Length: 144
Image (cartoon, rainbow, N blue to C red; front, side, top):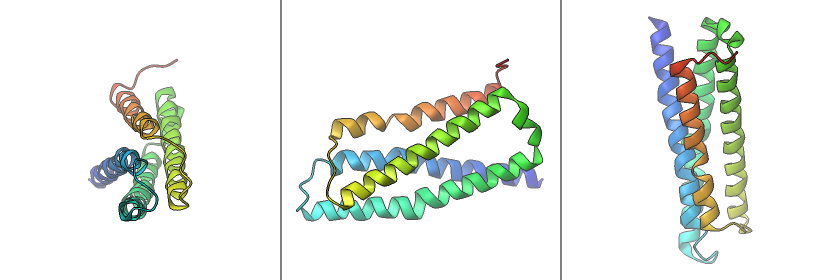
């Protein structure tokens, strides 16, 4: 019974984490088009800061917490190739999130050099990893 609660909370916080990873670069798309002296520039900084601190980081931590609890219950998954690939994908998503935080800091310092087109492009990265992770978890392919 507890297992299903743990799994549910893992999925809930995963969805919140993915929402943050999808929304933050979208904010950067609009933010990169605004003059650094505009009051809207500071509003975007506030929105990005709140998204990172109130949603993204807590959701990431809780996703990892509940995921580790699930892994503790089913530690045999560590010997499955598909699961190792899933963990690698999660690690890459985490690195992506850290990169987004550094992008936010560049906006905060008013030294962003990237275009809206660049942020539109990187906005697709979490979607690709989400698809890979879901396919791996649901299909559990035999990868050797």
